[in-house]
Length: 448
Image (spheres, rainbow, N blue to C red):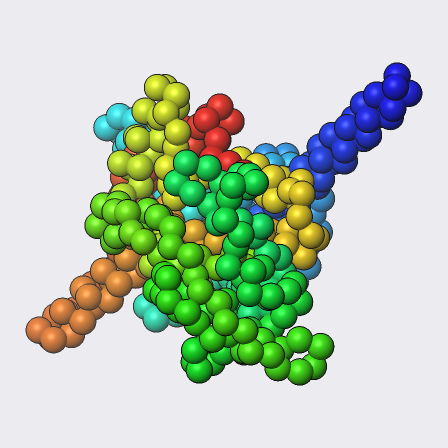
């Protein structure tokens, strides 16, 4: 007895170690997936910028100290220690500083004026004189928009690829018409356990066997288990004719669904008790590959869902902070930090399920993360890509207005004046990110 107990204890310890290792691998995979997503995002900026002749000084993945870098064709490519972001440095993101500002050196006027001048000084260092043509701010409006839109679009296209692999390559788990198991009895409102007094389940009593494939019910062909279940649930107490395929031949069986009570939740959230039919069959589940357009459709649907979260982001982060302080369960559909996404990836990797299920779960998480990067970066506020797009559009409107009224072309928009707003947005994002990280550490959303 003692030896068996020791064996069981050793087996449990082994399984715990395997689960921990799988969890760590899942987290590492999400970090790598995030790094790839960031690399693609920055590549989406880099390629059109170079194509349009803009000088790009650096292409970096991560922040902090540089781990590795190599200069190639005028651009330094490298990796930094903290893989939580990335950037490219383009020459002349803004017009040169006004001559007065150059003469005066550091601007007077306090903290924000100093920030504006610091931004101008840093920008001026990337310019090779006022006649430099290989700079971002001299690009036509549409080319500037293409450069800034390239990053988010790369995340969107990457999400389409991931969703396509998930839905078309692997498929969607679907309950089929093949019977996998039978219930022994009819459940009651008070108990789901079978006793000697429990009535036998109609399917078993009618002679249905595991492995049977349901062809039709009452003359109506059924393509999947959902169709069969709909007919059964709507026919309590009514005899139904089942045609099943068994060992290559069709058999006809008479099945009368038992009547059970079940709770049904309506679209408005109200719950009612209804009588439905029950025969006691459990379907087999298999991956069913979806059409090639299913991946793009899923990506578009996710854009709408994420946009709904982003639109309410401050309120949702506030509620997440309240739930963290009060210990209340978090909204499972609320925002997550990269810590939360990595934790979910670890849970998927450590789940007691087939490997294909875990791969599908990871692909779904990474694709959703890229949709979030796509939507978030389109917010029309600096320092996000959407902010630079908004600046370019504003300059385009000013130029169009001048052209319509035959006025001289306006000067390029000096976005360095928006540095105080950019700083406020950065601080807000930092605070919200900090709250989400703390919540993901101490009040996490879990899958299981």
